[in-house]
Amino acid sequence: MKSILLTLGVLFFTVALVAQPVSKKGELYLPEEGDWSIGVDAAPFLGYIGNFFSDSDNESPSAQFPNNNFAISGKYFVKEDIAYRGRIRLNIFSDKDRSFSPEFSTSPTNTTVEDAYNRNFNNVNLAFGIEKRRGKTRIQGFYGAEATLGLGTEKHTFDYGNGIVPENTNPDRSEFTLEFQDDPEEVSNITDNGAFITEFTRGTTFSIGARAFVGAEIFLFPKMSLGLELGLGAAFFYEGNGTVVTEQWSIPVGGNSEQYVTTVTDQGGSSTFDLDSDNTNGALFLNFYF
Image (tube, rainbow, N blue to C red; front, side, top):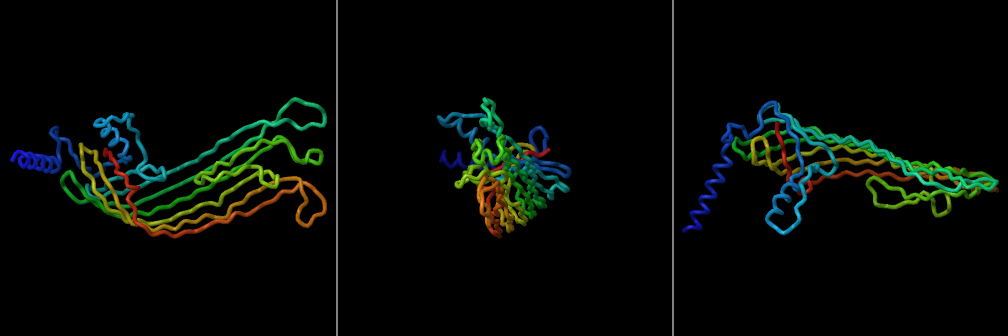
């Protein structure tokens, strides 16, 4: 009997808690017309709370992106039950690694020259949609549709201190490992046949898609919710052809003697169409409204 009464008490408390749209201080739980929101992955916060009940080490929670493409997510409510939503990622990345090689000279020298490896990535991801909400209690459902657009470029270049000249056809140069943006493949700037890469350009990537979604949120505190989302989307992905430029001292195609040769090799691209359901990578998210 005590168990039954306890269970009924918990159910009654939960129903009363969820049904209450205003806090004891008079604060509204649900978003209103004119509100904005931002979202983060809930996993670090839920893990932090859960570790209080275990022997695991408990590190401070961190704000993580609620998606897999590092996009900032937000909403604007034009009505209390209708919101525009969007995501944006703007990534402009550039770095430079330096190394040194003995300087080539026809006379003895102890000086060095600099070799450099430059990487440049640019990524833009955009999404815009509209969301309709249902429910007047602290549990709300939502559904809607959004469009997505993406664009990316990637380029690797090398500058060598020692040039390839008749007096020094195989110069001392530093070896680097190319670090690609989304590819674990490791490539050296010195090829198997002894050529030196001067430029490695990946083809421009482009994507466009549309997605329908449905989800639910429970407002744990005023203007703060925990939610999940499911979706069905279609997208087209395109990657253009890339190029690899190398230089070396060798016999060119159709030639009869060794000389300085620059070679441009095309790299194939790809295109993909995908229609699939998703669940935001299985993650719950926290939304903050203000």
